[in-house]
Length: 114
Length: 112
Image (cartoon, rainbow over all chains, first blue to last red; front, side, top):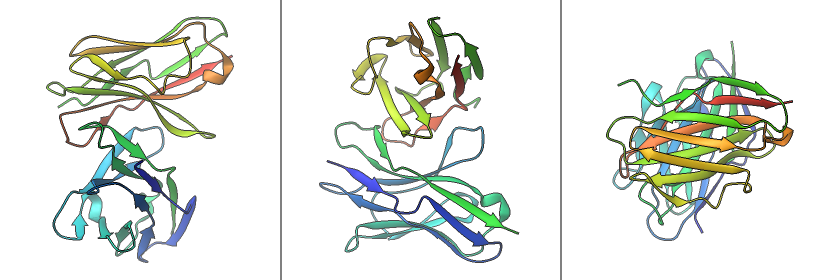
């Protein structure tokens, strides 16, 4: 069965420092991976996706994610964190039983201190 | 593009009452999803539709929950009778084929 794991409930980073939010996946076949962000009192917003091609995927708000097949990881990264990046981040993987159904991780709360 | 529209944004009602949540997906999207988010259980998929047809309702907690999609521009999620443990934020999302899902801003439901 497809699944993703986000090992950290919370990540704390100082503004201006690089940030990494971790995600590992388990899939049968080719992975189709996503990152979403959720700001307070809002729905989830799509950040980026990996289908095939370059292992480094660039997305919205300066975020990028690195796909690593050997480590089955898809970590979210940003070179310089902003206080406004503070939010809940979800990693997700497409369920092969459906073109559109995706399976979400448990979420990681990112807190950027000024 | 108005995005996915959910109503109401907040609902407070007493135990035993019927609750109806509404969703208008993005025009042209052929998939519609209902999720529930709680602190304890995280984000759960309740049911999803493809071209207005329910495809997978295995996430619906029990018979008190029902969802319909009478046409491509409207869906409802009903809880009857409601219970305090149903308190959560309910999200609707829509998508076109394999494109990323777009979420509404949710309905925060409190059952007293």
